[in-house]
Length: 220
Image (cartoon, rainbow, N blue to C red; front, top):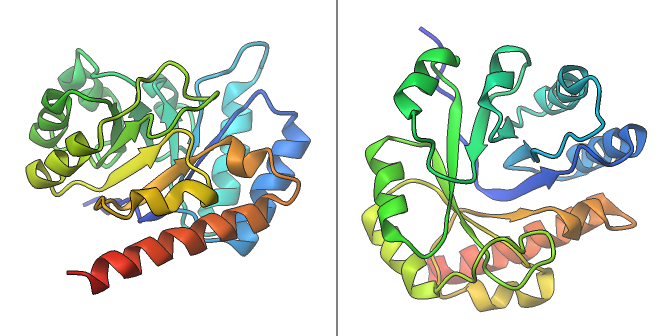
C-alpha cells in the first residue's frame, strides 16, 4: 500500500519556471537549506522551455531531500512523466474522476477558491488535500483573482477540515491583518523568489506566520 502524502502547514512556495534555471535552482536550494517550506508549486508558465520534465525533476530532487512535496499547477498529465507529488488546480477540473484514474493514487490535490463557497464544498466532497484562497490582498502575480471576502474564509473553516492556505499580495508587513482567520499556511511567489536574500525572506514569512498561529491559539 502506498504511503498517503500530506501537506504541511506554513509557507507554501510558488516558483516561476520562466526564471533562469541556474538562478531558480540556486534560490530554491538556499531556501530549502535554511527554511521550512510546506510545499513547492511549479507555476504553469512554461513558454519557451524545451524540457519541462527535466526542469521539474531537478526541482523535485532538491525538494525530496527535505521531504517537501512538489505540486504542478494545472498540468496533471506531467505527473506521470515526473517525480512531482501532486497538482494544484486553478479551477474545478471537470473530469476529476478520470484524472484520478490516470495519475498516481496518492497524488496531492489542491484547488484555488475565491468568493464562492460551492467551490469549497466541492473540494471537501471530492476529498482534495487542501484549498487556497486567492487573492487576499491586491497582487501583481495574482491579478486574475478577485479579492476574497474574509467572511467567506471564516465560513469555509466551518465547512471543512481541509488545510486552508491564503495567497495573493501577502507580505510580512500586512500579515497581522490575517489574525482574525483560521488557516494553515500562506502561499508566496515574488515576496520570496524575487528577494535579494530569498532564504531570509522565507524565514521572515515563517516567523510572522508563527506569531499569528500562536496568538490565535492563545486566544481560544
